[in-house]
Image 1 (cartoon, helix red, strand yellow):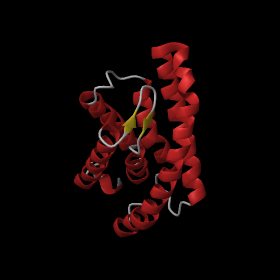
Image 2 (tube, rainbow, N blue to C red):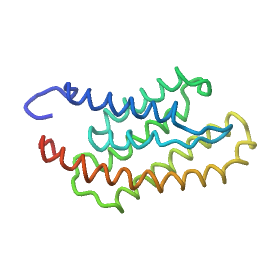
Image 3 (cartoon, rainbow, N blue to C red):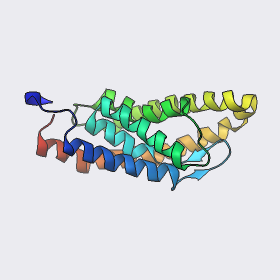
Image 4 (cartoon, rainbow, N blue to C red):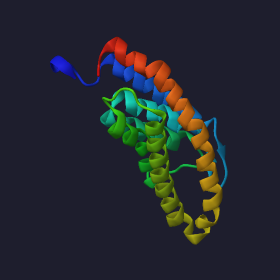
Length: 175
């Protein structure tokens, strides 16, 4: 931050808390889960958090989202590679987009696809560790769900970026 101000201001903590809460609600309560798959949009607030607040807060937020999910979900039970995939949803967009303006739909699409492929790979490997080769039987279903979520994630992130975050950057002049 500028002029020796604190990195964790009240404004930053407030924004992070709101986006973390949205992500937890989407992950824990507004998702469709099966044995080896989940359809959820919890990544959208994490992507926006990474773009708006940067990689350090993104790492912390991703960990907090997964930690709260472990506490309240009957399906989650410990920290593992799935924790890293949750962290990746905030970290990777932050590494590419923090301190940048005028992001195009193509740029947002590329980062969402790359991030989802990394998260998918981490989650698949963790499921393989737990269930062996039986977890690989659901890979086609999980790939289809991942591609379906792209059709929702990419436009939502782009619209929120264009209509909210760009104007926020102009108002507070943090970039």
